[in-house]
Length: 196
Image (cartoon, rainbow, N blue to C red; front, side):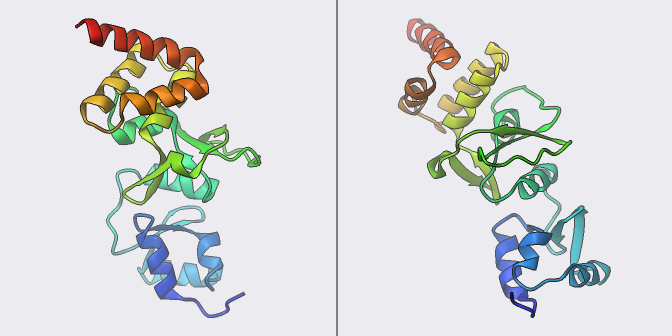
């Protein structure tokens, strides 16, 4: 293990994550917990939550709670479901908890995070302001499957299509994969749209 803290590497990592980083990420590049505390005390780092830090010269993100949840659940996770809809500003759904999709092998539950254990492919993750988020099509498929009110799913589909952030073909691809409720909602939406 590297014994000398590498500030350049830490800054590069944090920059790619909106200024945030986890203690375990810092530890991997030579920062002891004592060194992290010293940097907090000197004002170089800000403790955002237990084990989660932000570089002081980065502004506080309006999505800080999402950064904290994402960094706590690990690098293979992504903000998803209603929380992703909120990031995209696609619907009036107001999530009461942070939704994160984690790999199937992730088993540690966290009291303040709604973990969805599911397979997540690399092409289903995008980054918004340094935050890993499920893609628009995957997000819509997830909220449809999880039972979000039909009118909110339709609102998300409409917004996403109108803003050019997803195509009908991308949504139809998920219908082929997921079927079920997404098929029903998308078909009804496209029928109404076609007849309008």
